[in-house]
Image 1 (cartoon, rainbow, N blue to C red):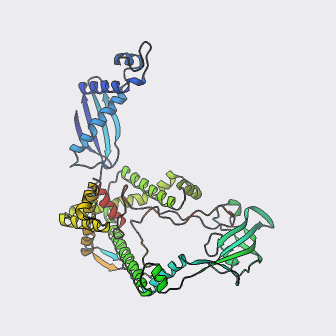
Image 2 (image 1 turned 135 degrees about the vertical axis):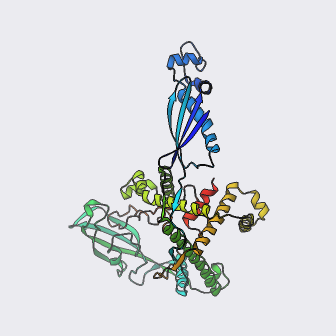
Image 3 (image 1 turned 180 degrees about the vertical axis):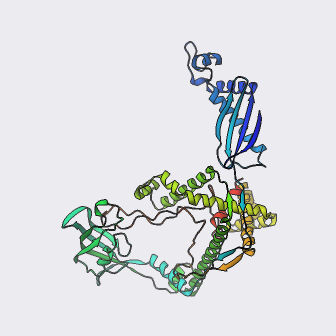
Length: 503
């Protein structure tokens, strides 16, 4: 077999493989031996007819397709291996037959390859640096949230309904004095302030007393899912049967011990330490995202469609997993949004293109700056991971897949890259009004984590008063097949490390 490689349009290479008459004959003979059992000819047992008889009976080209597949499977990978220093495939090739006869066969593979990226500048740029701190109020808010989650449920009999209570109610909805389908329910448990029902519904239950019946006047949102209810005014007759509230545990040494600490002060210190770790991770993530986003503004690359599609597929898969954890099927979620998988994937195209470009930028700068990971650094990381699972470094290393070591190596490179970029650009502390209650929340910007959605489609109980649609899931920046490793790495950086590790 002889082959030629030529650069083609939009980051593809054209691989032309020419096979001699002997190679073509051998491939046809092999295809005959592998597939003859599928064919029957009168006078022969099935699978026993000679090759020339089958070709006379079914046609001269009977085994051509299988023979071409055999030649492709045997030789295409070898070509890629021989040319690996010149280009890196990033998707499956488009195949065509340029010539076919008894003398020769010419098979053409147009293969999408990793594009080169041109970066105008990656030093001396003014870039936002994000810094998040933890206050006493943040610690108190976090602890109060934990207390609420472990609070004891108690039945309330001596007061009216308040926000955060769970009210057991019957309700009947009417439009212009007439009941409408899906607007009634009995014995429904509604947590006040959960926004499960349309705006104004839950708020009007606040102040009701046990056994009281009350008419609630509400207006359905203009974007409500039921066409016949959009913007309509309705009256719901609500009867309050039962109230359930929560009794917060006291914050003291006893509570702290239940939470795994020796004292209240020790527990507060432990919570602060966790919040400060999260805040530091968030600061680093957002700063790295800002760095790579700013540099990517000056970068250009002819990105092949295969890389965009792979990113879209990964984003959709990630979104599907996140929804699955919430008990929601992706198809049900998309149906609720009134869209399809293909339409939703199409809406991800711009984010996917940006994410792929950012990944290419990370890889290019690592290459330009000749950033390496030393054996000592790799060994230190392996020892750190080994210690976390209670093993010696030698014992742990024996259980590691080679790709894990490559991932560690590239993770070190990415860390060094961002240290380099931070030192060689003008980092300006970003001033933002701080939300005290959420100092440790992770946030991804240009490389945000896709598929992350917390809202669930509203339950079908009491369809009419329901309020909110699920929020549209965001797309991720992670490279297909990438796995998140540590909170301290930006998603683009992590995806790059994983991608390099998969080589």
